[in-house]
Length: 284
Ligand code: DGL
Image (cartoon, rainbow, N blue to C red; front, side, top):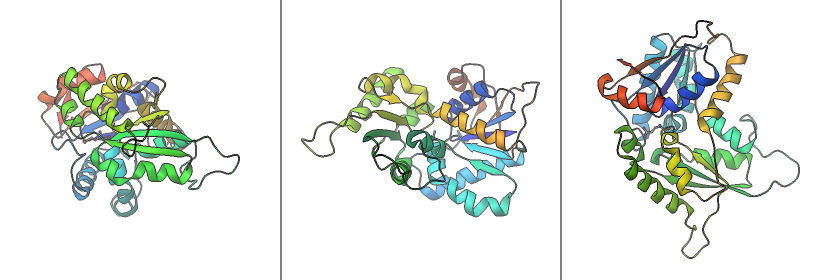
């Protein structure tokens, strides 16, 4: 069984990609709707909540857990892997969404932490939209800079956007909010400087693909929005092919199970809209 964890609905974007590409696996989704959003919480709180939820997924039989949440991946994953997992569950694994995204944008494998040799690569600009805590962690600019210094990274925190998505706020208000964040992200770094022209945008919060249409409308034409759910699914597929011990495909094609720390009756209808089919949550 593969556990897929997010603070709320956002991880459904990752689960949707996983179950479309690798339908035979047995997935268990856990949304911590009872504590969402995570993006403005302090680092210790995000670490503690993420650890408790991973533990819940381990306790129902998932040996591999994917943090389908950029905030938890950026803030808590390394610490969990290095200090908690070896004592608590040394045979289990926790993966995240930031590593595959950085590999995709830099085209450099994660274990390589300096730019590959060869001809000087073309300068590029990537803009990252994320929660406040992901932005403050500096993970995207730092890890991209190590591997591909020719890529300039602009970050834009989008406070309040996850709250709106989680509460099913009207689309028009969400569109306005996204436009404001995109406009702010493109303004020059100093007053009077020319606007920034990115070639690539990373929706570095798993909730944002749910409103990708508004990012696409607000970004200048020609900016490629990276498909983080697709990138993460491909990467997990390669991992599972190397590590069959964590979950082999089941020919019976089992349906995912959905758990929430919130109120199943409240989160189910919105999740069904986002997931594209009826989702019935069980309370955990
Ligand atoms: N969807 C999560 C992320 O990718 C968390 C958002 C939140 O809870 O603030 O960052």
